[in-house]
Length: 207
Image 1 (tube, rainbow, N blue to C red):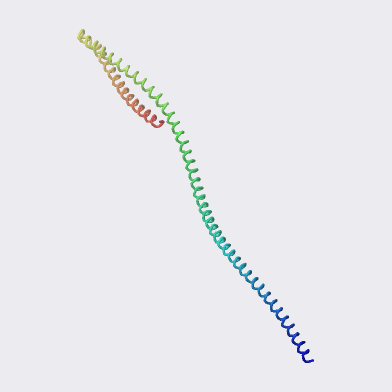
Image 2 (cartoon, helix red, strand yellow; image 1 turned 180 degrees about the horizontal axis):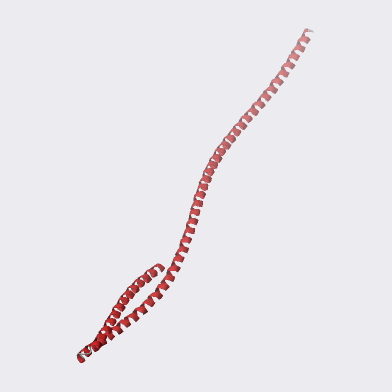
C-alpha cells in the first residue's frame, strides 16, 4: 500500500513537472515571441526615426528654399518698383520732349514767317535802293549839265547876272537833292545790310 501511495505521488509529481515544463516552454516561446516583437518594434522605431530625420532635413531644405524664394520675391518687388519709377520718369521726360518739340515747331513756323517777311522786305529795299541810286545818277548828270551850261553862260554873257544866279540856285537845289538822296541811299544800304543779316540769322534758326 505504501508503494502504491509512493507511485501515485511520483506520478503526480511527474505530471506536475511535465505541466511546469510545458508552462516554461510556453513562457519561453512567448518570451521569444515578445523579444522578436520588441526587436521588430526597435527596427520600426529606427526606421521611423530615420524617416523623421529625412523629413526634418526635407523640411529644413524646404524652409531654406522658402526663405530664398521670399528673398527672391522681395528682390523682384524692389526691381519692379525701380522699373516703375524709371518708366514714370521716362514718360515724364517723353512728355517734356513732346512739349519742347511742339514749342520748337511753333518757333520754326514763326521764324519761317519772319524769314518770308524779311525776304520780301529785303527785296523791296533792294528795289528802292536801285531806284534811289538811279535818281542820284540822274541828278548828278543833271548837275554836271547845269554846271557846264552855267560855265558857258558865264563866258557868253557877263551881264546875265540874274540868269547866272538862277542857274546857281538851281545847282544849289540839285546839290541838296543829291546830298539828301545820297543820305537816303546810305540809309537804305544800311537797312539792306541789317535786313540781310536778319535773313541769315532766321535761315540759321530755321535750319
